[in-house]
Image 1: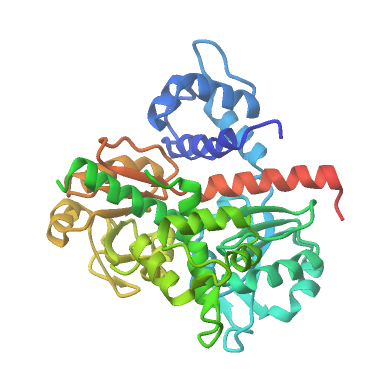
Image 2 (image 1 turned 180 degrees about the vertical axis):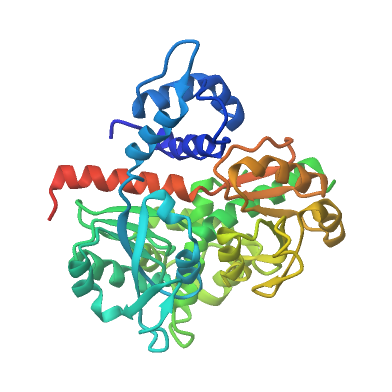
Amino acid sequence: MSISKAALSRIPRYLNFLKSLPEDGPVNISSTMIAEKLGLNQVLVRKDIAIVGNGGKPKIGYNRAELIADIEHFLGYDHASDAVIVGAGNLGKALMAYGNFKKYGLNIVAAFDQNPKLIGSKIAGKYVYDIAKIEELCRKFKVRIGIIAVPAPEAQTVCNHLIDGGIRAIWNFAPINLYVPKKVVVKNEDMAASLAVLSKMLTESLQQYGED
Amino acid sequence: MSISKAALSRIPRYLNFLKSLPEDGPVNISSTMIAEKLGLNQVLVRKDIAIVGNGGKPKIGYNRAELIADIEHFLGYDHASDAVIVGAGNLGKALMAYGNFKKYGLNIVAAFDQNPKLIGSKIAGKYVYDIAKIEELCRKFKVRIGIIAVPAPEAQTVCNHLIDGGIRAIWNFAPINLYVPKKVVVKNEDMAASLAVLSKMLTESLQQYGED
């Protein structure tokens, strides 16, 4: 990977910020301005942007529209990738209802669940299929990305079916370590773990700085 | 902090796993078994559990019910903390609809939004208040945790109001670095950044291992 995960995580922030500026605002923007507004170090911002764009001009800065296009291309937002989601429970429904993924280059094309009451229904415009059809339909839809939103004990089985269906990237919301072949990539998202960290931080802050 | 963030992130997984076992299953469980099922190192598991529980007995393992109670107490799940959420757009709605936070010790008591169409309505059983009332109502509800689910350009202002209302822990879903006083803790959750990382990992894996 020619770019660090930390740098990569900052790139979408630059995009968000650039897009938040008024259409009729200044044509150019400086790295100083971006750094200040996002609470980041200016040198860091300049280095990050050098990876994705043409680097801007001294004393003028970056052309905003060009930089937006460069970042969108770099992140693949200009050609959304199709994905399927497995698990149409609370979390799955929430992810399907979240309308912003397309903006981030992810297009959820279908959902899978084992609940007969959900199979055949539509959630946020996406059809829910029988979980038994994961392999067949992933191949048919030619999707590469699978989102796992099932309870932990079922996640590995679901993961195996996705991989059998040709999935190469897994966004895992189940709180479990998945075993995958080397060619499959996994990004874990653990809400319970995040909450545990936040809650401990809060307890310690209240002890250290008092209740007020 | 007497426990590392990495260890802390694993604790909810143990709980999830322990609770996933059948009620009428074995009374005791070994660290070997837990490690195996979660794909973790056994020594690591034993060290983690020693922080939260009584450590178990040699050759017998941990009493499952006791360990569940110990972990729930450690994570604060046995006394849910109240929280408010600001932003009742797609992401905010999704978070409110996600029914599992209570299980994780987080109880969302109210939402705030600036959209007149949403103010006064109920989403997933939670009342949506005018964003102008953040400070007043946070103090009234005596909440300590605020969830930020507004667009990046509005996040800092919202954050300031929450802090003025006595909020001490912020779960931030806006893709921006927040400035907070030392006594306030922040946990950032950046979906776009996660997706960017996943998508780059996929591209590189397809290049390295081919399309099949």
